[in-house]
Length: 91
Length: 162
Image (tube, rainbow over all chains, first blue to last red):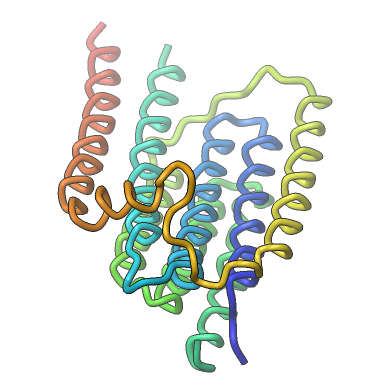
């Protein structure tokens, strides 16, 4: 049994599409916000997969580092979105 | 990739996709938060199977934080004034996106570890930013996180004092 870049990209596509569906389908804006980190997670999986299977010439850390930054950015985005939602609903 | 890592990858993939479907389909916010935590565990498992241990630890912490933020008591609900036709169009667009990405993934077997930088030199820029200066880039990312969270908190506090 083995896994390659095609398997990784399929999983990434499923995560991105689930996040896009959540962002488009939810009537509640805060619930739709949950789709954004899902899409970021899918993109991160794709980056790490390409770094693992598609990069040559020694350890290529670009994809891994970008996945890390995507995770941090998604946390910042959701924190900002939840804070702004609280501000809007208190009016 | 050996069999142990492959099994870990497929199990983690199933866990993460199941969690993603839960985030997209479950009705209550605490259940969605739990599903996002499942996604965090699955994505961390995928990263571990792909030999990205540091990224796995950071992703687990960050996506667990996202799950807590979305399931926590500060969550407020805001209805969007968008008609059902647009939501249905968005859902169809998500399905089309899945088909497009799946087709791209199916055609993605061309990568055979021979890429050294393309027309735009993105590999060289990435190597410069994320290998040699990785610590500085991550410090900037942490600064962005603190600035956004602090700005949102101050915004809310200012609004309450009015």
